[in-house]
Amino acid sequence: MKNVRLYAVLGGLIINFALFLTKLYIGISSGSLTIYCDAVNNLGDTFACGISVFGFIMIKRLGEKQSDRAQSLCTFVISLLIAATGIYFVYNGLERLMYPIPVRSSSRYLTVLCITIGIKICLGFMFRAVNRKAPSPVIKALALDSFLDCFITLAAIMSLVLISKVNYAVDGIFAIITGSAVSVSAIKNIISETKYLINN
Image 1: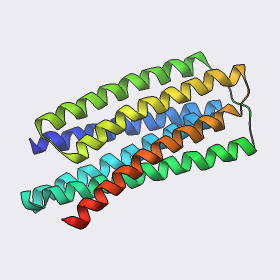
Image 2 (image 1 turned 135 degrees about the horizontal axis):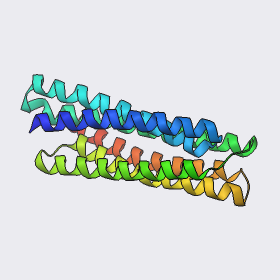
Image 3 (image 1 turned 60 degrees about the horizontal axis):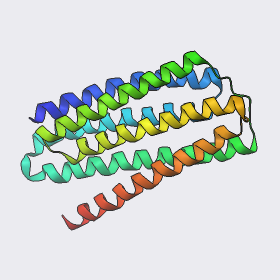
Image 4 (image 1 turned 45 degrees about the vertical axis):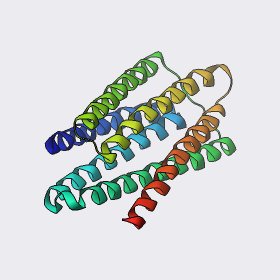
């Protein structure tokens, strides 16, 4: 069962890194801040999976007694990364509002982004299935984050569509909204895991 967790986060690491490279290319090519921030979010997910891999390897060495504490610590670090990513979104969104630049929309970019949403949904269900077989707060956090990422990418798509109809300043607004939502969710996890680590 423990190996299932390890293989799941290894798969998540590879998939998230591939999504990061894809969205980074689209973000740079289109000039869209929201897509670029979404790419950075996937990079954060890649690091989160990397930390989880390290955590599960350490759990094997520490034994069951320290397992819950080690997983809680991993969840805490993952939440810190997600919160930092959200704050990064907000900062860049405010900067884009002050210094807007033209953004180029493309049906090809929109199609690829829609595919990445499908991949993230599948990844979320995979983490959820693994969590049912071998419950873990780390896997649960990664599953929730995968589903939240779908909304971030959806916001990026909406931003790219609206930019051609309204103006490119909307890109900054979407970055601020998604950044705020991501940060609030992560901070809640940080508070929860901090309480657990202090009391145990």
